[in-house]
Image 1 (cartoon, helix red, strand yellow):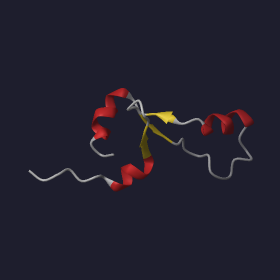
Image 2: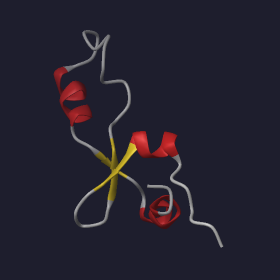
Image 3: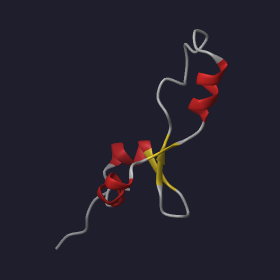
Image 4: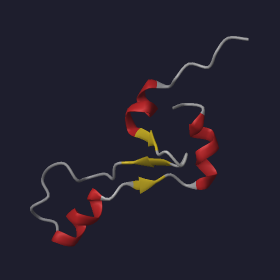
Length: 62
């Protein structure tokens, strides 16, 4: 059976930590943030975790 190819668009969005959990960058934080509060902009800098139910699905993609 052939090897599973990496899904390139998913690899560009999701990253894996050393612990094995998968994280992503939060949306709407790149530009046009002057209208948002400081708290909103600050919270978007923190990486978001992928839900546990989706982790097994995405581990084959990365």
